[in-house]
Image (cartoon, rainbow, N blue to C red; front, side, top):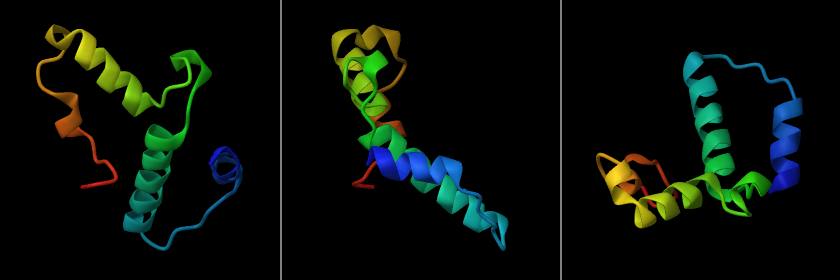
Length: 74
């Protein structure tokens, strides 16, 4: 997954419509947030870090953050 994300950030893309750009950006962000493990988060993905923070301190959040993300099962 790391190699795919690096290649996607380096390449230039041309889109026929704005909708194509939005779809590609959404796919890239989903891949980054749900698959890329980051050293600064101690090996967790950004999604896992948010879920862990919510489980430890739910009073920091107004609503359950799991319901706001467009995940793999939506």
